[in-house]
Image (cartoon, rainbow, N blue to C red; front, side):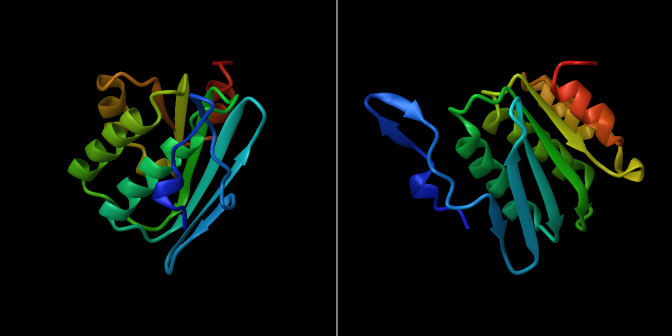
Length: 147
């Protein structure tokens, strides 16, 4: 698991991306795999995440992703087994907007039956260019600035 105390390391007075303790974060019932695609980061989320844990994990991943060359983030939630209530989806959109404000674009990839746009509206209202997709090619194209 990421160490929150290492989320920010100043380097000669400038913000610097901390070394990830690993690009794979695991817990008892969940996992996240994060990798750079050059122009954007990709995170694949799977398993069971209680809402509080998911929000705090998004926050840490957002902090950890700051300072790198990537301008976008694709968060693949298709293997997330937890179903969230509408008010939880609002919190997710708000947390992503807060924690990923350094990104130009953030795409959420979900299963077609999970597209509600609640997180998208909450994130956009909070000032982030956030969009929900149910097709990986569309999400990747958009996060790269192609759509």
